[in-house]
Image (tube, rainbow, N blue to C red; front, side, top):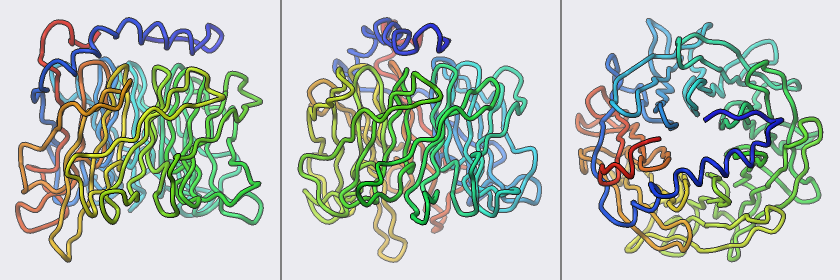
Length: 417
């Protein structure tokens, strides 16, 4: 659905959540089934298709950050029909540069797609970064976004999110004064005008702010996983010219290096935060945390999510998503030297933290990239898979670098609406 800022984005989002309530409950009543396997039809080894995924009622978008377009390894993103799995468009940047990582981050609604290219460069300098907006109906590029105060190595476009006519873009190496704290930027997706710059509270030591971002209604959530144990800031962006930080979230048991905030998602009064460096079940076994933000200024930690039988280097919490009553958390880790890999995603009840189903790749142990990215909406979950070792390579191939869409049961109560 579409909404406007003047109509109250938070109210519109709540109405949408209520309409999807019946569908959401179905995840806890049955095991998910495979719905679509999505491929880059002209993919090559190393394209990293599945680096990022996004989901709306009508579309699935998948980033392939090292895809080669003609002779340039610039990256691409592919838009699929969420109901049929058919490819609609392949998006590529208007100006293609080697190594710009177009597709490192993606998001989509029913009319627009946003695609980050954090190593793009322009007059603001090398690796200053960019984000691109494409029309989902025509496939045309409509806008290119850059930070008003962008500089070299800012990595603008590392993370992106979009909702209700606005987009947020993370730049985790932005320098605030002499300190590389990071920043996030809010844009009007119709005009491309920068509405606000979100900065961390500089009273403490903050680093990596903007590594992850999410937006829901008038709330923006920004992760800073390199700040000690990590932190997440919540902003009210209802007033475009004067955003307000209304809460800073920490893990109740956070320790240095947990990387709390490496991934974030927000929807329906819930925030989920990944902490892939957490050590509860072994070195970097990882975890995720659920928060109730019914009062956004006073988030309440509901549950800490761990995988049963989790272990060393799982990096659980690498990617997260939430929709209605369901949360998704993936584990993603690859060690080429030891031949070690972790790849799965798990569903949880977002109200209680109770574990539901576990999602795995149909390729089994051959696919070491499953879980690189996740998205969930209503009765559909999408898991990106950007690496593979079927041919003894860790860089993926056309036949195995995929994204996989799961549907809960397939009954009429979970059909996308």
